[in-house]
Amino acid sequence: MKHALIWMVVVFFSVSCISNKRLTYLQNLPENQYIDLDEFIPYAQVEYKYILQPFDIVDIDFASSNEELTKAFEFQGSRAMRGGGMMGGGGDIFYFTGYSIDQEGYVLLPKLGRVHIAGLTEEEARLRVQEAINAYFKEDVFVKLRTGGIRFTALGEFNSSGTKVIMKNRATIFDALALAGESNILARKNKLFIIRQYDGGTKIHQINLNDRQLLASPYFFIQPNDILYLEPMKIRQIGNADNFSASLGLIVSITTSILLIVALATGNL
Image 1 (cartoon, one colour):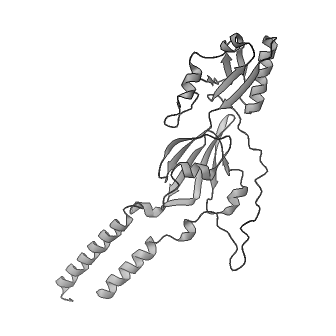
Image 2 (cartoon, rainbow, N blue to C red):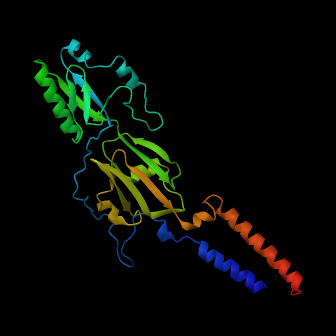
Image 3 (cartoon, helix red, strand yellow):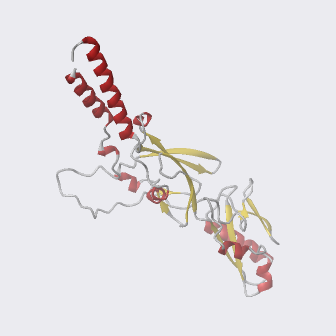
């Protein structure tokens, strides 16, 4: 009976253990030889640029020596609202002060009317608005156009899921992981899904956080409106990383009690 108990505990531990290979980031390093940690890994040959899409919100500023002219393009109190730090809860910081791109890809600007900017990069959209305003006004007016950082959503085995905003023009997948509280011990780091929006549709991409080739992947940099979903391991059914030890102790205690009862009933104790 003692041997049976020992074997049950050994089998349970062997099934429940999680290998470090499933937890460590950026593996595939050569073994038993000198590792050059200064190895240069070039980025994938994909130009990092975000294409504006319908329902995006952009901030458009106008500057000119003629103050009366620039006031015509400024929402009342908009600058004060921006200075108040209106980012809250992962929302767009320009929700109340920016210009929303409609379903057809246009923004509605004072004096200029509807200007189509969907399908363009930020710089291309800025130049288009600049052309429109140059055709309307004789005086020089400088245009600045930008999005409200990189907003993404983290779902699944993150310590802090939800919608997040990174106030940068470019951010890596590890920037996103750090902001989402990294992944917990029961996450399948070889199965992180990126749900990415494209012009006219959506694609799902799977990446492996354990593989250092991720650094050269076209998905190393995240884009605005990305959705990151991290799958749990099958062991998640037994308990999470916080209560797994308690669950294991409870199972061992119950097993021991059952074996004792059986031993007493059969007279083998």
